[in-house]
Amino acid sequence: MSERTKERPDRNLAMELVRVTEAAALAAGRWVGRGDKNTADAAAVDAMRLMIDSVSMDGVVVIGEGEKDDAPMLFNGEQVGSGTGPQTDVAVDPIDGTTLTSVGQPNALSVIALAPRGAMFFPGSAMYMHKIATGPEAADVIDIDAPVAENIRQVAKAKGKRPEEVAVTVLARPRHDGLIAEIREAGARVLLITDGDVAGAIVAAMPRTEVDLLLGIGGTPEGVVAAAAMKCLGGSIQGKLYPRDDDERQLLVEEGYDLDRVLLTDDLVAGDDVFFAATGITDGYLLEGVAYWPDGATTYSMVMRARSGTIRSVKSDHRFEKLERFSGIEYRP
Image (cartoon, rainbow, N blue to C red; front, side):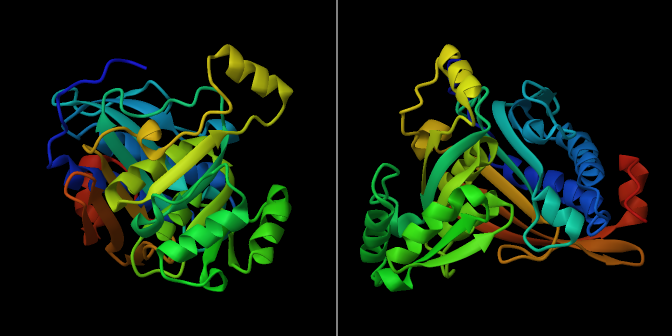
């Protein structure tokens, strides 16, 4: 990992970032329900790449979503931003939930996170990781190495609940059949999601939601993005790299990764100069999706900064005629 700079991102970057996720969501939204997740992702990537280069930063993409699906992407190591201003690490996911977008299901988002250069964990060849995430009330009591039932008991105690009142979000995958059985045996409820575990982690950490915990194996890039959100929300995420087979295990060992290491929130994204922005593509429990009208669209976003703990909700009305004039992207069908 490169030496961390003492230069800090400017506070105004927070609102610049939401323009990036808005552009990606507007481009992806036209592909909702069309059954073509790669074309939707390509549209979001193109729009995000164009807009991110207007942000006043000297950025390097550390987490570029798309590798594990062989999809279009902003690639790891890509230089982004205007080239002036603070040196930053950038994590992007033009569409968190490409399948959700392609089939018109809820909870697809466009997300971006920013931290000082050298602050973000680079996962190498690790495409997946075990994860546990929760909000500030229980941030200090979760333990990824503890039994599932113990984590549920500790979270319930920290939040003043009974274990039977705890709700746990889990990705609906065959690999989680045993985990789901353990959660239910402990008395807690399981809320299955088909995709989008960045949103799943955020909802587990947000105030006034019914979700208390995220558990299971999901994408490592999404884990780093979620960690940036946790820094802003005061929540906690822990992870352990999850090799899919012996070949990947050997590759990770050769790359110098300790597969027994528990990665804490600060290991995934260090420091407090962290920004996060997300815009809804489809309606969901976190954000409303893009709403189109004859000459434009409305987007719904959230913008967060770790240092201040501020969470902003941003509703924006966009006029296609003006957007297309300077972007060159066709937002209209």
